[in-house]
Length: 125
Image (tube, rainbow, N blue to C red; front, side, top):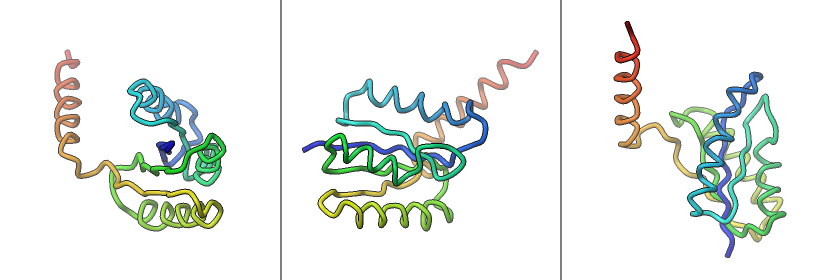
């Protein structure tokens, strides 16, 4: 049974901002935890979420985990991503589409924030 990880970022008009998601996708592929890792964007960049989900299905995914690369569970996660999940379920009724929680309250985020703050303090003259 093939499982895909569909990474979802907001999307930006600035390509370098969107490249962060591509970087993460490459690292996730390298871990080998998922059969497929696909990027997608809510807006302002391609592919959109539904297209990203379709690409996963076309490559044989039977389960697609929609993972929001968002810090909080605001309107985008609780409404927009739920709508995209529903649209994918309607389009591909034999495929399971699971919506993961955003990154926000994960305990490792505290470590990341601490590290970034320390890096900033060390880089100052």
